[in-house]
Length: 135
Image (tube, rainbow, N blue to C red; front, side, top):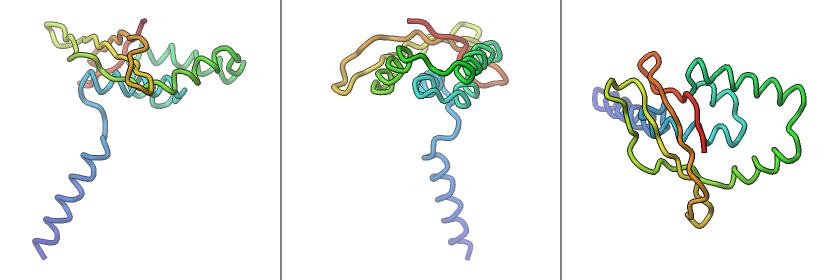
């Protein structure tokens, strides 16, 4: 009986680890945030955002709900959904360990780099959160 319980516990632990859980490194957070942004998953983007960045996302979400998404932005978003974000290098973490920068490459179907986003992160409540990004 003990063997069965231990086997089940080990299987559950492996399953939970495989499911991903919360991203823990700046690179993981930056990539997940980029994916959420491109798919207009405002909920996921807010969970991965600093308090400051959440306000920007909430404004964008309210605007999209009130006005809809303009056709030119919809076309841009559809193109972005086809790209795969990938952290280029290890994050550049500040000396105090409370902020980081991650370059996220956006790769096309052939693995060619379309462009790079610079994602800024901060530590809030002992977790990495996106504080902004730029091209």
